[in-house]
Length: 145
Image 1 (cartoon, one colour):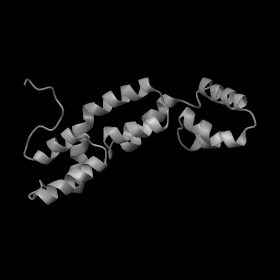
Image 2 (tube, rainbow, N blue to C red):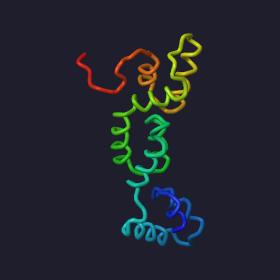
Image 3 (cartoon, one colour):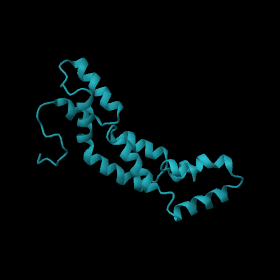
Image 4 (cartoon, rainbow, N blue to C red):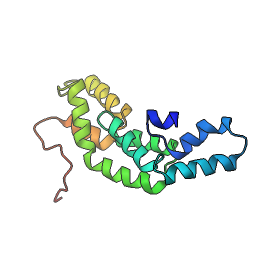
């Protein structure tokens, strides 16, 4: 209970943390089932927590990789990836403006800014949109091309 009182955990993560303290794996699984049934443990809440903490600073690929490491389930990861993709450009724009805010003038500056955004987990297409500059509408909307 002490772990769960501090922050949200995925089932797999909590299982890894508690495994050294139990004699039988069945008793651990029964305990985790009981915690899920009583609402103390939820992969959905864990995903919401990770997205809430990471989305303002990270791209979708970094967040999705973190969720995969925590084994929250492919369906939940896919749903989250779709939601993150809808706001990817806007989030990248906010991160870029906070760090740089000025369109790169030299190829070296452009490469530096591109590496920064890529390291944060933003896709190459998103990085390209952000570094084009100008007063373009940077919110992802379907185009009529």
